[in-house]
Length: 129
Image (cartoon, rainbow, N blue to C red; front, side):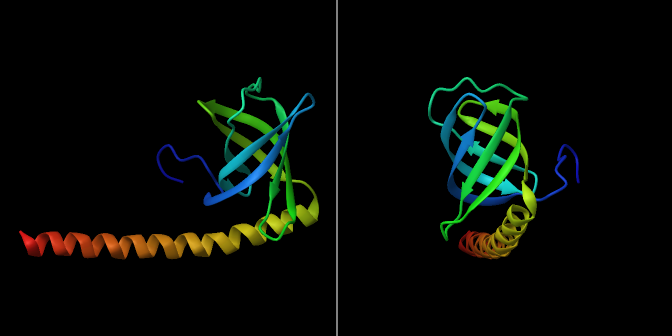
């Protein structure tokens, strides 16, 4: 962990739909990134969620399965919600770990591809000047 980065588990870019449930209401949300102990979600609808409020996050997987995570709202900014949560039960933990591993490899490949593309762009700029 470096500087202001406090996360122990790495985040992956992962876009999918999910449902956020409190004791009072249910909201559709869109997951933007995910880790083993949290998620960043976008919520479009007006809401009354407060920092520290307990939530259950149900994340829809590509194969139709669902991963349930339980936790709390850790922070909010505009329509973004930081959710500190953990998968509930062994089955949900296993599905989440599998999902994170699969997408971690994809993210690393994307980063390597972007890095290579950036190097090529910089090389072309230097040679054209």
